[in-house]
Length: 136
Image 1 (cartoon, rainbow, N blue to C red):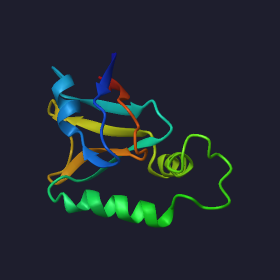
Image 2: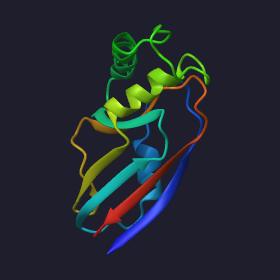
Image 3: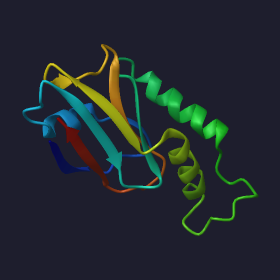
């Protein structure tokens, strides 16, 4: 059996934001076992799973991604939407748009220190949409 829903996230500022609570608030009556796939329908934001305890992890993600993929490189040709746009597309491709999480005993199978992050790579990305598919 397959169930699918869309979750609309509020607008987040640029950076990495823990969104596990948005996901769990929208998932009711999970099966004992299965898989949840979360897909973001955007090309300038991504999803990742990482440490959920220390907020400095989020700052370090933002720092290193900006260091590796800076804005305003002279070689960028896709620049009409602002200096953050092309770097946002590259970051989204590197981080990815889809996450798969096992369902264990009716709950999302995150490890003790794991959480789901929205990585917002635009200065003004707007609200983001997630497609969540639950496989029983």
